[in-house]
Amino acid sequence: MSAEPESVSLHPLGTAAAPEQELLCILGTGDMGRSLGLRLLQSGYRVVYGSRRPHSCGPLPQGAQAKGHEEAAQSAAVVFICIHREHYDFLEKLAPQLRNKVLVDVSNNLKKNLYPEANAEHLQRLIPGAHVVKAFNTLSAWALQNGPSDANRQVYLCGNSDEGKQAVAEVATKLGFTVLDKGSLSAARELEDFPLQLFPEWRLPLRVAVGLTASFFFYVLIRDVVYTYVDQGKDMSFRIMVSLANRVFPIVSLIMLSLCYVPGVIAAFLQLYRGTKYRRFPDWLDRWMLCRKQLGLVALGFAFLHVIYTLIIPIRYYVRFRLSASTISQIKENRTSVFDTTMAWRADSYYSMGVLGFGLFLLLGITSLPSVSNALSWREFSFVQSKLGYLTVFFCTFHTYLYGWDKFLQSYAYKWHTPPAYLLSLVVPSVLIVLKLLLLLPCVDRSLARIRQGWERKDPEDVSARALLT
Image 1 (cartoon, rainbow, N blue to C red):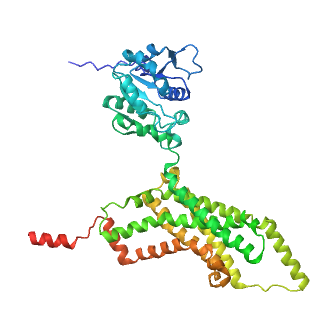
Image 2: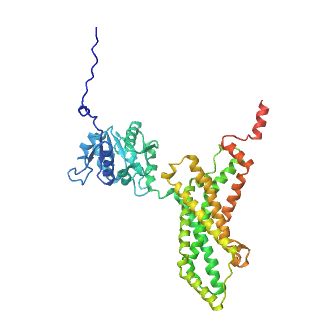
Image 3: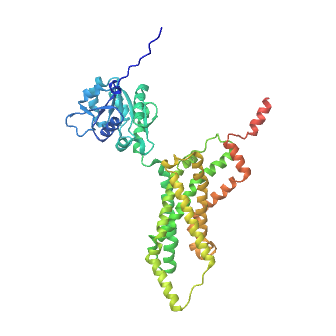
């Protein structure tokens, strides 16, 4: 008895019924609503807009529908509210249609504390039968149109309904964004204030930069301009625009570069003193360490200004006048200057250290970019930012020492008994280098490595107490 072979029916792929695309509703046809709808359509969703004038609501993304508010809200399970808070009143009339629906509030305010409660909480109070979720408000219309490919972008959300947050999280993930759940709807105020912050991570570095720049500018102004006018009666105010600026910029750059690495050294000594890595650092040290990247980038900006100002020195009128006057004076007196080998070594070394330091500084800035740092392993990133970072500090500090050379030994350098500005700029980096060299001593480095691997030094009082108990 022979068995018949099994047969398999083959059908063209196109004949199979394609799964129906999920329909999402957007109330509001402004920039945010159109950008969000375009992104949803590109991600495979169907989109219906709710508008007061569905037949004349302006250009909409191709493939989207436009209906009245009630009809649009009733047709989708997830509704995006892309309108300003002052226009929320009409939503109360849609309460029956929005019951048990997920309402995604994407609104923001013009300033903080504009209303006594968050927009999302106000929306939840207007429509208590809906599941309100605060999300997408930290993204701009431009970011929605271009997607997350230009940078790592997160979608923050919060809400009281786990099902509602899950539905919104699925949409955000399908759009290509990373979701971060901030908890209940009480966090909506925090999310709405987030877009109103202006460079929150840059405030401390910028304040430090402004403070250092202003302090050293007035210090150099008093020494180089005011002192010369009082002591010699010469007007040197023309030096303010280039000469004084080109003295202040490298000073601020060197100090801020050193400030990037000072907190790491302080943290290392704290761990050695405490004998453990499991105790929190002081809050001020935590804040300092969190803004090291911004400190470094601001310092790099000042270094760029120093390089540009240095390059224009030969074309300055004052410099060309001094050179021509000196040349004519030598010709009239029939004398020549003797070549100074020591000065040549000093000048070449000074410029060489500056070029090397600035080159490494550029490397630090480039590797701090997310697109570059994400391509590096942690060991590679740590090598560049730590090992090469300290080498950058050394080159830049040595560059400054070569600039000063033996000037600090000359009495004329101490105008009104004040030290030259470059000497003040060497305090922080010099202390940093000395402390780092102490940490590199074999006995210290070995102890610090053990602590960072989890070893803890036992307290003698705890040891004696345990001995008494046993």
